[in-house]
Image 1 (cartoon, each protein chain N blue to C red):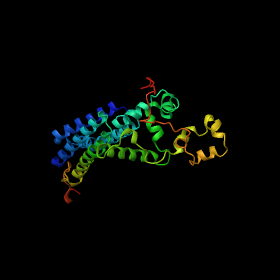
Image 2 (image 1 turned 180 degrees about the horizontal axis):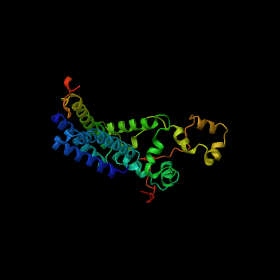
Image 3 (image 1 turned 90 degrees about the vertical axis):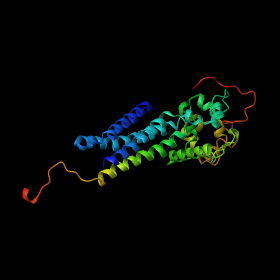
Length: 209
Length: 70
């Protein structure tokens, strides 16, 4: 449901509740009792669930993640005009949905992964508002990046399964799939965001959103 | 009952207004405010409403039946 529709529903519910508060006598009739039940029970709960669902959806958007100041350089890294930058290459070529770029790579593709990602987001909020947020270049993942997140899309893809480097050693591909050889921290795809280490020569692509 | 209904209504209205503000507020803290403040107010309002239903005096619109009516 679009945000404006939920806002209208919420305001409509509030107005109806206001009518019953101002004139509680209308609840004396049978129709009034049904109205009161709708206004004080069904509509508020429905509005709350719809609002929470909307916020959950919004929390997966790239714009949401980049609305914190410390994340701005990470958003900028998505526009680096260099295919060697993993995050930028994925974002610019729509290998991940551009409007959910952060979430697509940084969620946990396991059972309850979405819930864990939401709790991780709450931890971000706690640190951002009540703790001491680190400098953007000092931000680290809570735990090492799991290959599972890469393989969610790449597993079975020809470029991955038959890639020359992946098959140079017969032990490489099984090790990647078993998460014993990291995609991004074993020296192969280790240029991801590289915030704080761009140098002066890096250029930015001015396309995208 | 009307007093409890008013309290329930005010809680629900304030909770809904908080929710509406959170929906148009595009900061990450909006979600927490929506759940912790808006959700709590709406939940309390709904609870007060249900409480007013079960604790209020039972007023029947039908005339009371007596043994003579049977």
